[in-house]
Length: 158
Image 1: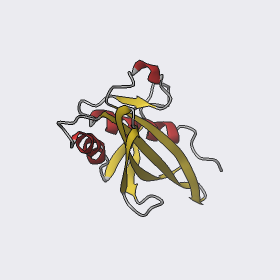
Image 2: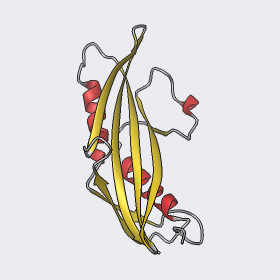
Image 3: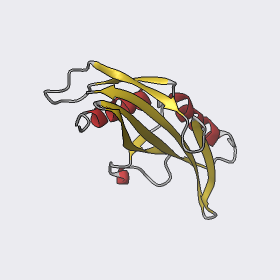
Image 4: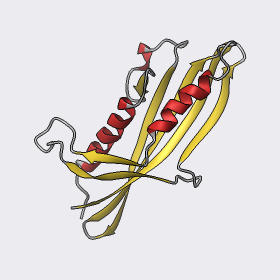
């Protein structure tokens, strides 16, 4: 039996809403959007969702995993050495333990009802949230990058 064709879309929309609602003043760009809208010297966050990794536990019972990665870009400010840590912290705190998954969208199947709960679970490194400070982009460019990653799981039934 195959899983519901709408689950991934609804989970993606629910995760997207969580991070959009908690981004503060940060500019969020999906990796599928046109990043030409952002100047190279701007502070912004580009994100990708990977998934679902789907496992059928029993007939009609599924576990879905979604990996979320945020690449934070910040200009280097010699007077504010904590800038990157603050920006990364906004993203880190948006990773909450549980996010409601709702039938968000604009098709006949979408009625905003709750389908389940996305739970933050350890990723491949065994941690809930992984933050990697990648440092300066190059010696000639005053930009630095940080990567913030997490994984969510949801269990659903047909």
